[in-house]
Image 1 (cartoon, one colour):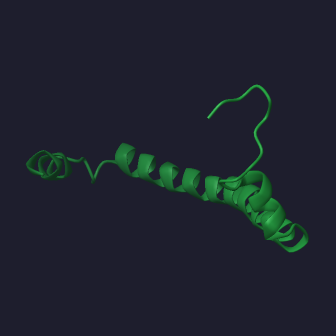
Image 2: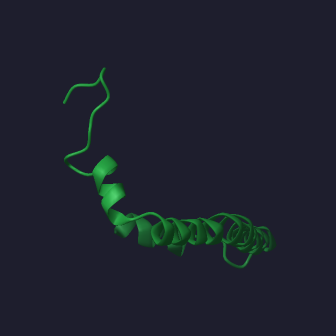
Length: 76
């Protein structure tokens, strides 16, 4: 904890290079949120919702549950 405090104490928070790096990091976070969260997670949630509506829970448990049938080459 003391090392983290010391690292924060000696950060060059007033320098232009440091502030530019923080700004670019925030821009990168904004890009990541736009590209990956909106373009990947939101459609994945819609697909998962559609699967939960159109596929019954019984059939999912039949193939993925504890009493699922095994392939001929696999062992427990």
